[in-house]
Length: 131
Image (cartoon, rainbow, N blue to C red; front, side, top):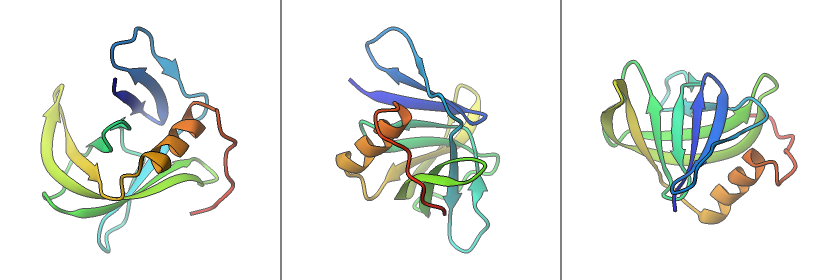
């Protein structure tokens, strides 16, 4: 079973394939994507498949394939960092008429993703690290 976190406008929901119902994350969630020397793309809508370490990110201007990115999952507005990952753009896609990029998390470790899941499911206490 795959576990997904779907974020729209900073409000995330958890969905587990094969199960009915969706659980809401009870705090705002944002993603910042840093690529090269460019300003970060801040708080785009995304779909995270935490079981496979892949992420679909909505972007008006998709990134080139193989672009290396740094992903920061955080709570706004104080910018409390929940998790940081390195990733690489796999390809540009259109999902349900939404353009974006599929990103593979390069430093994919189940332990690291489980820690992020724990915060989103409110099983772990939130950390107080600033980015």
